[in-house]
Image 1 (spheres, rainbow, N blue to C red):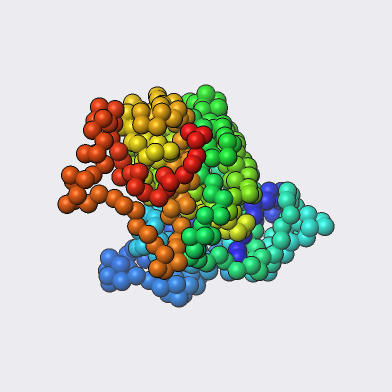
Image 2: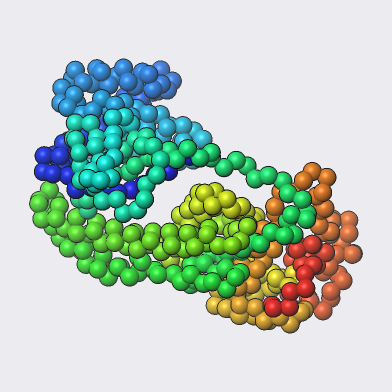
Length: 427
């Protein structure tokens, strides 16, 4: 299985010049190849293969001799990246490839002839030689490639792609009802006020890194807007603003890594999270800033690969399960918690079982129950939940419980479902 490690490198003045020239050459080549491929499609209505892109690189080397100063394998990696970008676009996993800008930082990959020296703390890449590096943690596996990245703040990082020899986790196997009953399921409710609330009582607070550096970033960006375009003062001001953004990003990633590591190393066998539609949630202008600061997508990405390493089962419950509105004890649905106005209700009492719930704690318990119910079963052991159909309106739970008309309604996760058959009285 491939694993990426990011380490800080400190090149010499000569190496720094070579790295910047290599990054600029790869950016220039990427833009030229993208422009050439777009023109080919407009004229011939076809897409260029990787082999044709590599052949066009040879023609560009004759036109621009300074491209020969860069490692040839790094230039060929540019064509591979462009082909991957087009494939991701056609598979609807990313947008259409865009031209790269110098101010966004440059990078280039070295797929071969790279070495790591942990004794002397160096990273060796072609033409640049040994570069001083800081290995802040243990790195295991075989080195496959080294990508040098020039950040907006002017720092240099090396992304090490390592092969640890372990097999990639496959699809989740089917379990029997006896095995599922013995599983320890940990439900996690993600939110804005608290970054994560778990069923075992652990609460991970939201550090709000963007708001912490918001005032300083505003001053830096205001100073940047006053500088004359193209001047050195503007470049210095841009670096200062980039450093503030880098600090906020580093603080957020540090908190997420610590949280996901503790969760993946817990005693639970199954970890359940909710499938959140972040793109739709960001349309709310009142919550978009806070939602972006929490980074729900990054939390899920880290949980996926960390659970796979630790041998945990990660279950993603359906998007419209209404885990926050449903009572985790009896299945009653509280409609008052819906929408933006319901966010102010942090605790509520169920009118059916009279259990007092904390909003986030109840949601984590519901996610855990739905996660256990969503585990794949062995064929032949699937027992569908007893839910009302269209022809059974007279026998539906809504008709059987007329006293709930004013207080609320019974959700689709009604009392007939197996997830509420429990003796839990903790509320």
